[in-house]
Length: 115
Length: 115
DNA sequence: GCCCTATATAGATATTCTTGCATGTTTGCA
DNA sequence: TGCAAACATGCAAGAATATCTATATAGGGC
Image (cartoon, rainbow over all chains, first blue to last red; front, side, top):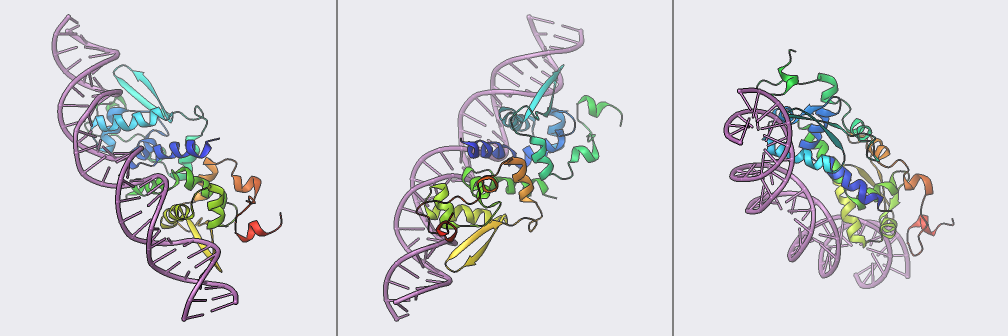
């Protein structure tokens, strides 16, 4: 019954500004790595590393589409409902309000598509 | 607009097994330090230190009653609703289900009171 | 097959967190 | 005033994290 240990481990993954922002972006619709790197204004390997942390914790899931890999919430899949916690924490998720952020110079298909 | 930074800082306080267990205990009713030390089976200075972390983050509030100091959630007070996050995280809080845990050898008034 | 693009992994290092222990402070009481 | 109980604080060693740079892998098009 190491429940507290497990929940603390899960929260530790969330307790990081960049990872929070990533989740904020993908909580409504999937986004690819290059787009997240553009939004966070961080080098791609850095973003990939944060995604790996979230992936290993079972918080997000990835879906390959050609060379792009799209990440989305892995809700319900793990025992815990991430979106419920995020909702309590981020009352106004950026992804929900502004939708996909079109970033100049981002190579992702959604950014290439007309606004 | 350092929202993510702030939220991450807040989550970091929660992302700790002992602190989670403390919050689980006091989320329904206040408890004093000696009782928490007994429940967690940790030395008093250790518990006091974790309480200080939660207190500095504005998550809990303390109320002195003689030599005892009772701690409870400081909900609504900070901008963020801790109990909402806890509810998403701890679907069945120990404090709510079992009530005050009477611990043999605990010096607190609530433990001294008859069950 | 080869090259380019998108993404992942592997160190390395500075910083922060965790935890135990000794000591300080406040309150109540004789 | 002096002592004891209940808490708080300070410090220090070890563990864990954050972040960067360099490098590796995997798909798609030629």
